[in-house]
Image (tube, rainbow, N blue to C red; front, side):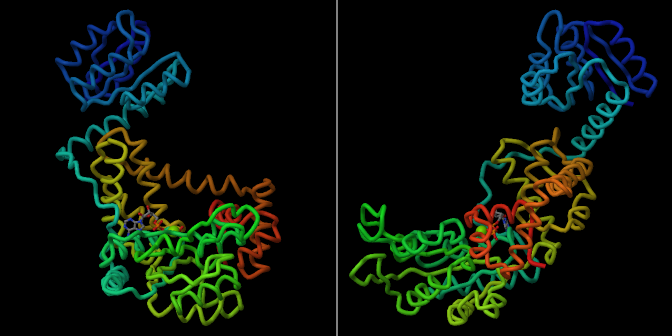
Length: 447
Ligand SMILES: Nc1ncnc2c1ncn2[C@@H]1O[C@H](COP(=O)(O)OP(=O)(O)OP(=O)(O)O)[C@@H](O)[C@H]1O
Ligand SMILES: [Mg+2]
């Protein structure tokens, strides 16, 4: 049995909810003004309040705020005849548990009250924790699984020297994070770390991004510009998506790696660099070498120190720690205080395919925190979020839709050119960055 307070100035509504909830065995209090409601609220601390927005003496939204300030353990369900966006947003912003429109539907109320009571119970079993004001370190890699421990060892070795390193792994596995951690723990951590995403820049500008250019080197080069190599100085140059480098640039880059010397585009003098190079890719470079899409000599030069980051599905035991970590991080980012996930969620998460790896897990947790109306994330909510992830993908590609045809066309083109994205982008007449984002959006992957 729970205590439920119903606040509305229309007595038929009060009576019907009172009867309905009373039949379910709850103790029901009713009030037809805000003043009366507030006094009952403070005297009896009901678990659930069903609160109308338009009251004779005060706006329900203001009362909601006052009630929460007095005692934030109750769940407040707003009811209203207003359907406008602003009121709904405002109610949710002020911490309402749910928002139901009139005319009232008994099933809807029942469902909302049940959900609210469940959450009150879960909250009660979760002791409050003092908020730690400290941000979890954004350059910490969560994981204790065997493959991650191997990665940590290699990172440790890499921090002691300037060896070139290659990080390989599927999208969202944490390649960029690993690169940041290597840099942060190296002897030259005070020097810059500069990133160049080879897939985000059109091919003919990439060379100048990397090596810089001299004024007048090409149309539009109206002044000298240092390249990323130069900007990295004695720090780290992080070359992301190195599999996207054209064969021509691969040759030039290999020359640079071997001599640590280079020239700006259109430049006359040789420049020297001391930077450490970390390259990352989610392509299978070995396969690309076999298909003559990636230079063998560059591949061998890079692969000396390879960190092969496993997909999340191969380190499921890391999921509980990751969930805690992302909860903490999200709470600090959003100012929320969601403490944990309901029992059963972890094993549910372990069963998800995680095509987007750790990034996808992080997104699911953020979505759950945003929608969570208590201290505990419930399994139903996670199910809903996982289902929308799935159905979004299904919707976008449901057969016969334009999106589906586009996806099929891209998929086919990519397989025709053995996943050489630059080549595919040219055939599809879209830019490489656009192609890359479509690959991500549709979740296309080599078979
Ligand atoms: N082991 C981990 N612990 C904590 N956070 C992680 C871990 N792995 C990844 N993340 C987080 O997941 C997100 C994606 O990671 P990151 O950008 O490093 O992936 P990536 O491999 O570079 O992906 P892509 O190939 O798509 O560029 C980031 O927010 C990162 O901080
Ligand atoms: Mg990345």
